[in-house]
Structures are given as structure tokens and as C-alpha cells.
Image (cartoon, rainbow, N blue to C red; front, side, top):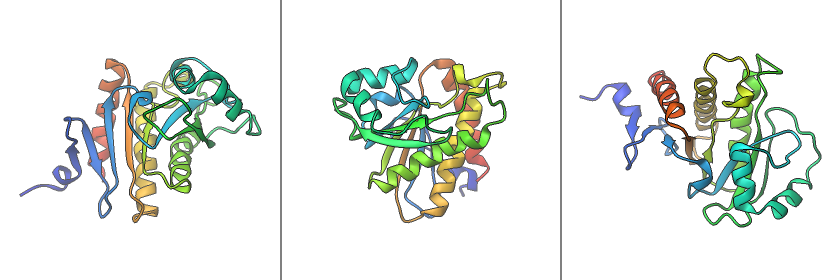
Length: 204
């Protein structure tokens, strides 16, 4: 007989850790990959408050979408945005996605206790996904690199808040199916994220 943990802690077709929300068809999975390469409705950009092109995954997404086109679309928004905000633009030249959701994660070097803002960056992205009729989304580990500040384990914190946001969304919108891909790019990131991911899904 399966235990409760075995029923919720599953693996996707490629062997990656995944979690199926109880009583819904929604799923979150952890991938050792780039969020910019996933075939999804919306790719999430770890955005800055000004929505300008930056480094890391932000720079990758701007390059793939088209620097000029995406910059002009971002300029349509009234900036600076607040930590936790999420807005949407077309994906332009990205063939693997229909849209880009720009989520503003907090800089823990400036606001060292901004855990709720990090949660909101994930959760508001899911709300924007739903508002636009989309169902699949790929996230980077928001605020886990230079924005991690002095957090002991920013990768684990980002993973935790992503899973929290997924669970909250699944509870509040059980009839709206979403497929969330949380992407850890480096091997070290994946190791830390998987440990936290496994702990989170066992708490269900």
C-alpha cells in the first residue's frame, strides 16, 4: 500500500522530482535546466524593478526574445515596479513560449527579510498566467543568485517560496490546471533545490 508521501512525491516522464496537487490536475516539477528553454505557455524572467535587460537569466531571455522588441514592450509599463510584482509581455522571437512573465524578486542584500515579497513574485506570476488563459509556466530560481544577499541558502529559500505559491494557487483555484516547471540551472543549485523540494512536498 502506498503511503501519503509516495502518492504526492512522484517523478515525471524524465525522472525529475514532481508534485501533483491533491484533488487537482496541477503539477509542479523540478528540472535541472534553463527556464528559457522550456516549451511552455509562459517563461518567467527574473526581472528588476525597471524591467530593463540585465545579466543572468534576464539577459538570456532578452536575447532570445529580441532585445529591441522586448525592451520596447517593457517600456509600456509604469516603472519602477514593486518587489513581488509580475507583468506580462509577448515572447516575440522565443519559439518555445507564447509569453514572458516578468517577476520582480526582492534583493535580500537590501531587504533581508523580504520572504513574503519572494512568495508574491511566484504567486503573482501564477495569477498573471491564469488571467491570460495560459496553463504552463517555467520559473528560474528567483532571488537565488546576487539578490540572495546574506541568506544562508538562497536557492532553498527560493524553492520553498515557489512550492508555497504553487500549493496556495492549487488550493484557491482547484479547477484551473497549471503545470509549473521550476528550473535549477547549475548542478549545485539543483542539489540544493532538490533537497528543499523533497522536504516541501512531504509536508503536504
